[in-house]
Length: 114
Length: 112
Image (cartoon, rainbow over all chains, first blue to last red):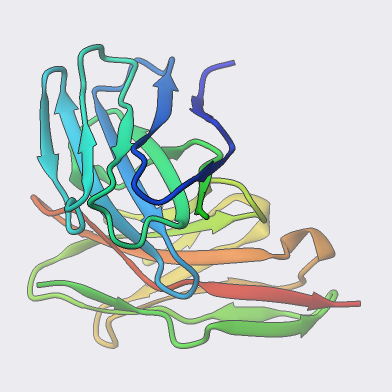
């Protein structure tokens, strides 16, 4: 089955540690995205990538980093510089540019900072 | 700049009753409009979309939405809800050349 796989599903981190969330897709989509979801706030864009080896900051990129070395992979690192990292993180992909709106989502990774 | 307002954070409704989830947007240019559904602890799934043409759009699971340009609204409706419709529903807007703008979400609570 084609889709997006995020791992781990749950992650606990101590303050001051960097963590990396994995996102892999086998849909052959060019564009990939990372969103952060907090209760009552909808989705906020962290980073997006429209092509391999290129990515753009979204609205809340501070404290996060990404890479896009392969078309199917778009890992997100939550660094110690992120002041409030506890959240639900969603990875998505699409066939075209960001404004097509037809996004396919993974099941999410829930990060808790202890 | 675009913005999206979902007027209700929660909507309780009895099973088999009709429901309407409200979404209003603001934009100075024409837009694409979307509704997504998120079941508990899962990612989002596209319910329906308006790109152009007929203002009444039908989606999956018996949902439909009507685009009203004069009122800048895109309300989601279902004539009879089921317990399996319990989820959070997100409205989103995309203007050509811009990113998706998301509403804060509406939780649909089905009462037995």
